[in-house]
Length: 284
Ligand code: AMP
Image 1: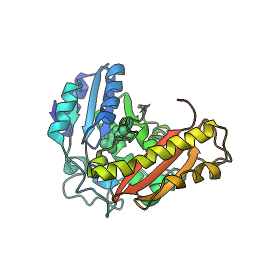
Image 2: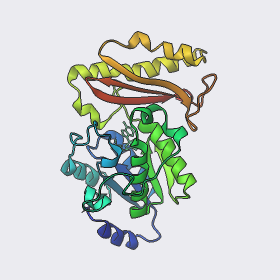
Image 3: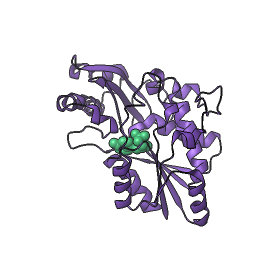
């Protein structure tokens, strides 16, 4: 079922009393990464809602809000095939009110702690995580799910959402799902659509750098500076590296030495497209 209005969704949600409900928040242009979250939700919930909403307040003024791919018909088809119960695709007016100025001097925003946002993606994307937390909390309040499913592709986002849920006593359990990659290693992303064939090749550098750092760690290198330096051999003038950091995967704290709880985070522009990826040094 495709719904655009909050009241329609609330009505059905009331009929689901006593059932386990899962929410998969997305911005659409669905791919296998999103579908892996939906699959996980289907496995553990009685009812699954997928939201498709390109959230204007998480985009900066010079970012790709207007160009972001919008493929609702295809998304709905994929969701139906995957057994999703409701696709909730509200307009910005439905979410934020008609004629509202979308800024935090006019609307109530959720403001995650500076320590978590003043690094990695939050550093260059001012206000991004305020926008993300605000829309996710609104979606939680609208759908009232028992579980919220998020991808480790956006690992900083998952940490921040979990922090928000803890700090604000939101009664939703957050389930993190592993990154889905192409066979080449490229992490699936809706933004990969912006890349040319050559760009896709150049984009492989992100996963190659991460894999190589993990291999070096496995060989016994734990010095963060040394691990980071191994990246430079992979970068060419096709790559505009924004950050490469190694932080604790749960707290995003910097550590003296890398360990199994460390996550390597990378953001790099290829053909002007901002791509992100990460890998945990522990485990598989
Ligand atoms: P987006 O539509 O980009 O906002 O993503 C919606 C959700 O799908 C987020 O929780 C993402 O982390 C997750 N996601 C996006 N790409 C992938 C991927 N390649 N593997 C796993 N999860 C992903």
